[in-house]
Image (cartoon, rainbow, N blue to C red; front, side, top):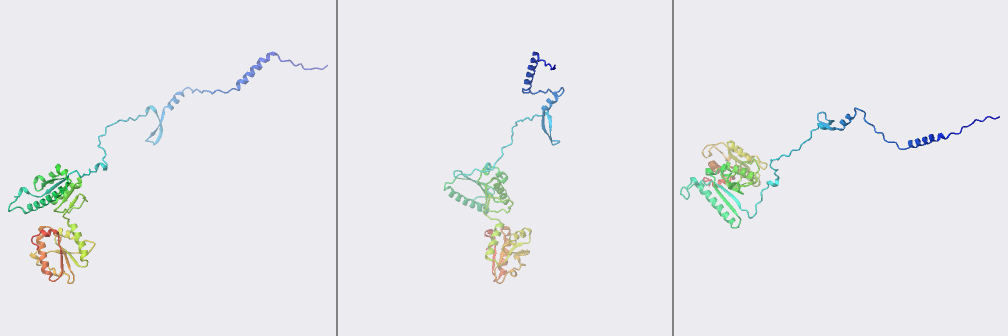
Amino acid sequence: MISVLSHRRPSSGNKPILFLLVILFICSCTSQKKAIDKPAPGKEGKEDQKKDLVEQYDPITGEVILVPRDEIEVDTIVWMKDNTPPIVTDDDLKRKKPTADDPVEIAILMPFNAGQSQLFHDQQDPRLNRFLQYYAGMRIAIDEIESLHLPINISTYDVEAATNSFAVLSKKEVIQNADVIVGPYKTAEIEAYAEFGRTNEKMVISPWRPTFRTELENPFFLQLTPGLNAHAEAIIDFIHAKYPEEKVFVVGRDTEVERSRLKLFSENDLQPIEELIVTDITPALSKTDLFMLMDTLTTTVFVLPYYSRSDESFVHDFMRKLHADKKDREVVVFGLPQWVGFTNLN
């Protein structure tokens, strides 16, 4: 007899279990959902505080630090009215150019001294007569200009009057509006009006006297009578061209003023010029010997840079002495234009 194991057939009760296993397997293959981590108790406040921190530069440490937002001060813009005047440009400073229709305003400042002089009198002041003639010549010239239909307005002032000093006259509207100022006569006032013209861009013309101050270049100042510097330069140029090999002397007396005046001639780059200092104070320069200075073969040149009437006597004495001492030798003398008005020179 053969023994065989007996296999028990599965009962129908196992089917539900198998079905359940299949369902669990299917569910395990679906996509996973993200897990939401809730902060641990006590960490919620720290996270909120971290979100309210703002980066800010610390000027003390020079580093960027985190500062709570509620501690930052907000800048506030406040609008204020600025009363400062506007900036002036170069275009604003440019003067309005006159047109052909605009009249030219001319102010004439002359030393008439009319208040102290009697007009048309036998003993009339020769100085007053001189400036009356000068003014009459100006009026003739102005009449000719007006005949060309050029509009001109003229205002004339006697600057010798106390009420017409520079301090008073320069503030008057007529002078403030003048395009051209002619005069005055005194050196101090010439320099004051020259500076006034430079500052206010007005032409100032000095027809009678030069001013020797050249501290600032002044394109608005015109001298009809050149200063001694200009005369010295012109005389030296002429001597260098005409007498390049001759002996040349510039003459002056032994004073500080005249010694510095001689430097205008002796210190030049064109030609040697010797300084002749006259110390002789005797009448007619009787102790001075000019003959020994003169060249026997060529011309000897003397320059006398004198322009004031107070120096006329010395010029007269030197010229007489030179005429007596030169004998048959050739001499040339250079003077200044003011000599024409000297009465003692023939």
